[in-house]
Length: 375
Image 1 (cartoon, rainbow, N blue to C red):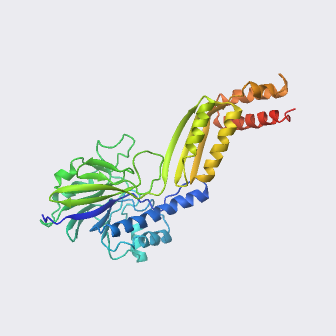
Image 2 (cartoon, rainbow, N blue to C red):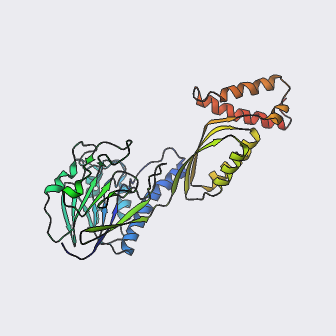
Image 3 (tube, rainbow, N blue to C red):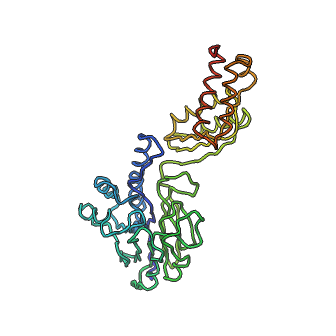
């Protein structure tokens, strides 16, 4: 093997064309566009760092049905790096007989420096041999990387595997069990490095085997997304550097509210978030009407400032305090309505929609009472 150091970027799971139906149209469009912007950023990083290649371990596209315009835009985003790109299909964009890849070929938009591998084999690059195992169907229960054991490569070139799937026994139980990969494949196949895709977080399996994760976060899961990996090979060792490339920060907060001070702490915490944050905020517990109105102001200000904020308040009950009840009609009709609304809030599991409506109705009722308009 040559002692000349080799350097490449390992990336995966671009998921171009992904839809964000849980957000409103404006936010969804920005989040989708960010995926293409991050690919362009990867190309710029590859150029700045003068790497020998960029390896893309599957799921370039989120679906086979992306538009022709999206296909063209994706390959246009690679322009900043003129060196070799090696791409394989993953489970979302598998190399079917008719696929997003056959459409890309028909469109004639794949640049000459992009090596698209649709069948298992070896791509020989200057200073590097890439052993590629593309997925030719969405799900398989055979290890497609087994072929690496028998693939021959020039003796003077490092052997780097490129695959998409789940390393057996090394991912959380929630991971997809399809497309298995043996945990010792790098050793069995005499690989200097195994570049994997499918798991959306950056994850080290061992010194010579990593998941790069999706370069642009797309889920509320704290598994280290938003990176690309620069891998340097020399004298049989692999040095791996994580490079932050993602734009948006996705966070999920689950907050229990009991005291007014809990709401104040949350309001202060919301003020630390900025325009690049995407937040899912789940509230549980109970608050007085006054505390909830102050917190609602803070949440509204955050919604205007952040990229996106999804609020789940089904687990929150609004509890009128003594001042709230004192403003009512002393046990008359309005008090009875308040009691009924309070009971509806206490049964969110039975009917979450009614609980949400009751919570908002209670807020309006108490505001009117304080303003002297409840009667």
